[in-house]
Structures are given as C-alpha cells and as structure tokens.
Image (cartoon, rainbow over the protein chains, first blue to last red):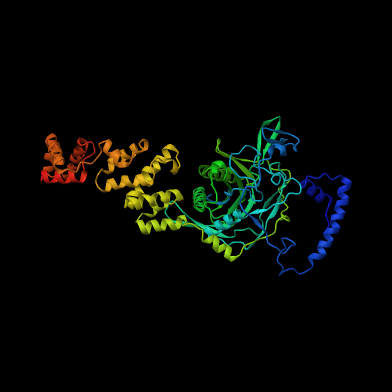
Amino acid sequence: MALTKTEVEKIAHLARLHVSDVEAEEVAKGVSDILALIDKMQSVDTDNVEPLAHPFDAAQKLRPDVVTEPDRRDELQQLAPQSQDGLFLVPKVIE
Amino acid sequence: MQYETVIGLEVHVQLSTESKLFSGSATTFGAEPNTQANIFDLALPGTLPVLNEKAVAMAVKFGLAIGAEIGKRSVFDRKNYFYPDLPKGYQVSQLDFPTVGKGSLTISLEDGSEKVIGVTRAHMEEDAGKSLHEDYQGMTGIDLNRAGTPLLEIVSEPDLRSAKEAVAYLKKLHSIIRYLDISDAIMAQGSMRCDANVSIRPVGQEEFGTRTEIKNINSFKFVEKAINYEVQRQKDVLEDGGRIVQETRLYDADKDETRSMRSKEVANDYRYFPEPDLLPIVIDDAYIEAIRATLPELPDRRAARFVSDYGLSEYDAGVLVATREMADYFETTATLSGDAKLAANWVSQDLQALLNKHSWELSDSPIQAERLATLIQRIKDNTISGKIAKTVFEAMLDDSNDVDSIIEAKGLKQVTDSGALESLVDQVIADNPDQVQQYRDGKVQVIGFLVGQCMQLSKGKANPAQVNEILRSKLS
C-alpha cells in the first residue's frame, strides 16, 4: 500500500502540522515504505489473537477518589502567553 | 406519505466523584475559573494519568442496574481532535472495549404499555473544558475546571419511535442514575447532556433514513421540542423532493428550531488508537459481585412492591418512584400514618402541587413526611375532615408548630358531638322547607344539598358522614 501526497497533506492537516510540498513527497515515500512492511505483517494469520492494547501484560492500577491537587492557578497562568479574569486567552475560535 | 421516526440518544452524565478521572483536581461545580485545573489537566509535558477507582465503580454500578454485560477487560483510547478546551489534543475515551456493554431499560408509554429500549454501550471518558466567547480583547477565554471530569456516555439503540418515547427513556435513565447516586444529573447545569440522532423513513421500509445529530438540548422539555421540530423539518425536505444531509444540528431553544452547524472543511477523522499511557482495566467477578451488593432497590422493582405491599395503582406507584427522595418520603408517610392510599394521594397530589408551585425540591418543603403523616392520622381518627385537612396543610406551610397545635389554635377540630350536630341539622331543616319537602316527595338526591348546607353552617367542621346519617333519620 502506497501513500499519496494528498493523503499526507490530509493527515498533516489533521495533526495541525505544516508540511511543505517537497516534504510531502518525501514523507509520502517514507511512510509508504513503512506501510509496505505493515502489509507484510498483515499476511500473518492473527484470527485467534486478541488485539493488543498495551505491550505490558499488566492491569491498570487505580487511585482512591481523593482531591490531592491544590489551586495553583496564578503560578500556572504565568506559563500562558495571555490570561484575564482567571481565563486562559486563545485566538478566537468562532466567528 | 406516512413516515416513521427513528431516534437514538447519546447521553453524557458527569459522574459525581470528588476528584477528576485521571488527576487529583477537585470537580466542584461553579468554582472560580481554572482553580481546579492542575498540571495534568493543562496537559503539561511529562504528566501522566492515574485512573480514579470511584469512576470505574460507578460505571460498573450503572451497567449492573441496566442488566448490561460488564467488560472484564476495558481499554481506553485516544480520540484525536484540536480544540483549545481540550489541551492534550485528544480526549481519552473508550472505543472497542467499553466498561459497560449491551443492556436495556424499560419505559412506560402513554397507553400504559411497556417497551424495552436497548442500550448499546456505556463508556467512560473525560469531559472537556469550557470556551467563553464573550469579548476578551477579541479572544476566546478558556476555563479548564471541567476538563478531565469523569463522564459516562450512554448510547441507546435506535429503538425510540417518537419524541415522547425519547423523553420517557431519558427520564427513566435520569431516575436510575439518581437512585444509584452516581451523578447529580441536572440537565440545566450540564451534569446530564443529551444528543439525539434523528431520522425518518417511510412506514414499512426496513432501511433507516439518513440521520442528523441534534446537539445542545439541555432540558427534558427541549428534547421533545427539538426532536419534533427536526422530524417535521425532515418531512418537509423529503416532501419537497429534497434529501436529508447527514450533519450535526444545534437546537436553539429561543427560536425553537434546529440549525446546521457550519460543516467543517475536513470531515471529522478522530484517528482513535489505544491510549498508551493507560493499561487495560481488569475487572473480576468478585469485584462485580461486590458492586452488585451495593445496588439500591431500583424504581421498577420499588414500584412493583408499592403495588403489592401498599395496594397502590400502577400509575400512582410509577409517579411516586420517579425519584428516590419522593419514594422515601411516601414510604415514611405511609408507614407512620398507617394509611398508604391516603399517603399516596397526599404525596402525589397536594405535596406535588406545592413543589411545582414554588419550584421546590422535596427537601425544601416545610412539610416533611412526619408532619404529613400526623395530618393523615388526624383525618383517620376523625379529628378533622379531609376538606379541613387541606386548610391545615396550607397553615402548616407558615407554621412550624406540630399539627395538633395548629388544628387546636385555628379551631379546626371536627364536630362529632351528636348533640351539636343534631341542632345544626335542625337549623338547616328549618331554614330549607322547600328542599325538605322535595326530599319527602321522593327526590332523595336533595340530601346532598342539605348536607352541603350543614357543612357550610359548621364552616366545614361537621363530620359529613354523621350529618348525613342524622339528616336521613330526621327526614324519614
């Protein structure tokens, strides 16, 4: 399976990555090589194999439902480019 | 052409945990912006999720309440999209292996029949923050307090056939969730939210029509209105020879209409994949049984018991079990007063009317079960008549004294002294010679008028049964 340049552009858009024309060609070729390897792996019979959710054969540890985090808003908002009235400000997302 | 409506609902409920699904931040509603958002909720690099055990227990509890399969091994996935109220760039959800699988619940229809509605699945996921679009220097304000609050998304099968059925399903779901005490489930506050998938098809056609998804429905009333509007809109489109476009539409309660949300340039492609930061949740039988042991008596079973133990009608029982608080109130009143039928009438009519009038929750009522039970006892032991009891009930609203003191202070005690009643009856006979003659001439229904006159003369305090008896014997 080969990936086209258009598909690379679509995926880049979904990931909000800027990919130049030249890069798109290169990435298309690079990813196509990976997909070829995956095609090869697809030929293995996996009918009776459960999908692997995680490489570790272990179960999720749970934590008690307790509030452990203090309010650090003022400190954390210093990391943001802009804030006002306790809100983080971002470029307008609706017209 | 005749069309059939097909509806499926996706309901999000915020699980009422103290802390978030994957972090130790608080989840209190209405806190100052971003005071409950820590480094994990802000998606700062290097932070990792740690799963809240209470959220898992609540999801399993819900699953057991609707007879669902519980996923022994459930897996979290990343649903990828970019929006500033979701700082990680993905929402952690469950795609292929949800914690709660297929189940069902039963709704009552208007004609008294019952219908089983399938629940496809219920999965855990994290809530997003809030975007505020008021003018902040021409920018959007982001409050991440809600980001990471645990949600249970409950997806129904497309089994609902009308807006009324959809509301009945939603109310039943709400009732079960409140009985389980796993969420406040307040639609107006967003702790319960509903999206509706709506399509229509010609009657008899097997294949589903193209569906639209209606978002932003935040009350039971609007669920019905939004669906009815959308069904009519789809009919109009088809009748005009058009076709339905699969899209997301927003319900606007002010205009009572649904509107297309501007279609995005690129269709949603969430590129789900297993969340590598979380291991599968493994649940064993012992855990499931331990949760099962904590299940309360659920509304259906409780209603059946009210019918068998208290002799209530199925309708009355259904009304009384709608909320756990109301059912508890009724049971206390019935037990203390010793008269379940009177208790059912007072709770479902007078008390309910009172709550509606003042928009009160049951806990706001100045008349709690113990006082209502005493009032009912005073009707039963003939201290007051049923009619006077309504006056006492009103008086109890502003007077926190015990019921007997109120009856005494207002002089509302029923007159049962036969001497006093006889002179009352004599007076009415003397005052109404025409009606007395009519009665003696065989027009016996006039007795009702005469009893009424006695009641009026006594200001409602005479015992009507006794008055009736004395009248009959004096007139015969």
